[in-house]
Image 1 (spheres, rainbow, N blue to C red):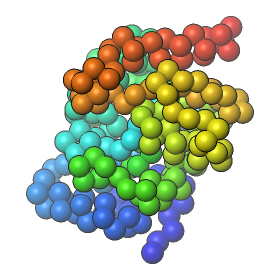
Image 2 (cartoon, rainbow, N blue to C red; image 1 turned 90 degrees about the horizontal axis):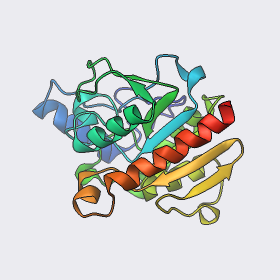
Image 3 (cartoon, rainbow, N blue to C red; image 1 turned 90 degrees about the vertical axis):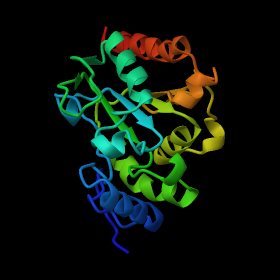
Image 4 (cartoon, helix red, strand yellow; image 1 turned 180 degrees about the vertical axis):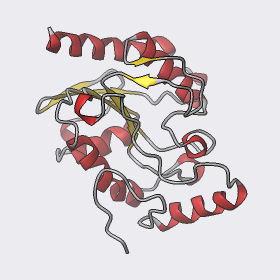
Length: 221
């Protein structure tokens, strides 16, 4: 089996057989879709300008797996990108297309698992496998000062990528933790399921980013 290294997997990453085969099947069904590992969305200033990293679970089948950009093409992106714009982490108009011209400001967006999983549920081995990409993704951002983890799986994989014990940094919505120079902010995932059931409200989600904005502004002051 190939041992890929670096922050981004190859377009036909073979490491997780189940995910590789699932994507291959969708390439046959929808040849016009992205249908590949979804790369990290970087700001116009590149990796050296990143101060905030947002880490989700995995690409949505008809969202990022279709469009090739994290959180683009499904409801979760509407809430996330609207919130980023409100707090000054993006510029331009989000139109749920990778060519909409939207630009991130000092912010990058990635996923703990880069390939779309069946039923949006990666298994433990797939999550572990993909940390070979999550860890160098985090490490490339020398100016990183804040991470927002969206959901328990993204949070736990991030803690492990930072070589810390999960038991010492449990997930909770609105939780905060310090690891080195980085403050971890955790939030329920901005999925339609979470918002429809009331587990996550728009106000709850925005409150997390308000704290992130306050934190980064205080560091810059």
